[in-house]
Picture: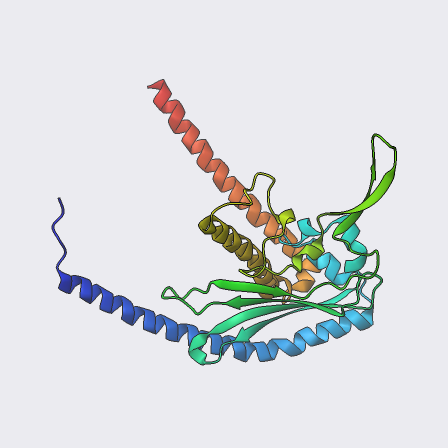
Length: 279
């Protein structure tokens, strides 16, 4: 049986941890200020890049960028590609907190489109709202707002038309069914926005208890934010590398390294099992 710890030791450890957290928070504030000073230098370059792409007539630049990214490539269906050919820019901006110590309050991603035959929107934005930073200096996502795609008549890429035939009468009717699409990215998530059924597995229990439902919502919001964060940190600033495929090659190399590491571990475990059996 372990003996009880002296309360004064606990108080001392708590005091040291609080002091450490205060310094770390100040570090975060100063780091954000430094990053913002560099954002001012990046912005003209990104604006010039947008101008060069537009005036130089680089076809399917952003469609190619997204196809070559690990987070978005698998989400782009064949029926999405024509609409994404009209994508002319992607912007990512942090939403500042009211005070410096608030760090950031959220993240906004904006997709800019030319006029196109699919929807009326010139821009489609998603906004990720953060909770106040916790004691571990981590944000939680409170909710995700999204613009609604204003589809033109008969052009909704998230739906497909299916002809159903009545086996008894032979009569047919057409119905709309949901289907996978890149444009499902523009879906709000949060306590006031239920998870769309198409996002859920067939085995998912729609009547799970409140704790399970909240955990599932947090999972979907975190996965969604991972894509937005990838846009902000990697895809938007280094779009040219994704366009040429260099960034995709780098991502692929990292995946191969991870797989090799897992393979080596599995091999070592197999050798150990074999040795035990031999003994």
